[in-house]
Amino acid sequence: MKDYDKHIRTLDGAIAQAKAQLSFNAGDGKSLHNRGESIKHMAKIVMKEICSPNIIVNAIQAIEFPSEYEDMFGGNYNTMEIREESRRTRYKQGVEAIITILQQEQERLDKQQQEEQQKSNKRMNKWTLIFSAIAALGTIATLLFTIFD
Image 1 (cartoon, rainbow, N blue to C red):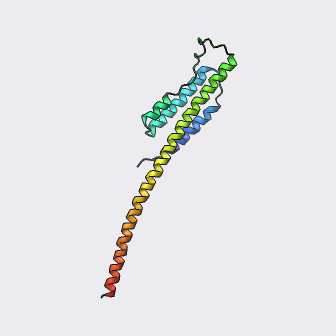
Image 2 (cartoon, rainbow, N blue to C red):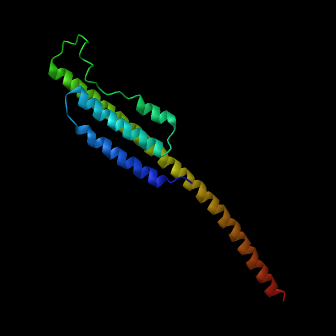
Image 3 (cartoon, helix red, strand yellow):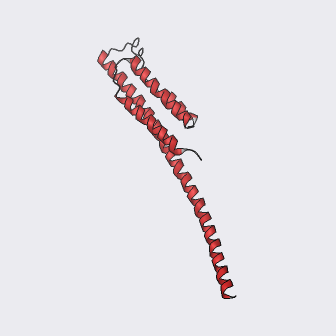
């Protein structure tokens, strides 16, 4: 049986850390890129720690953050403020994507935990019914021995 509670707490911590990074407001691409890559790295470590499927780790890896070089040669005629705001928006969208993936993984684990709990309860109910039937037969047998003795 998996340690669902521990994994869910780990995801809670990762989600909180990622949400805290949403307020990071640097405008330069290097700072945003480095911060985003750091969040991405943390999320990938968490996913590996809780044994998530590789497809989840790959989805996190595919998220891109703005770089300091993206506007350098692109012929972009926007003002510096517009470019910085665009980088901040891309950074925020990347962090939100990571948060969404972490939350979906948490929901998946919650669902698995509930399903496993239901299966366990069904098995327990089945054995309770069997032992109740045995106890009832024992009571009937005792009653019959008492009556016919």
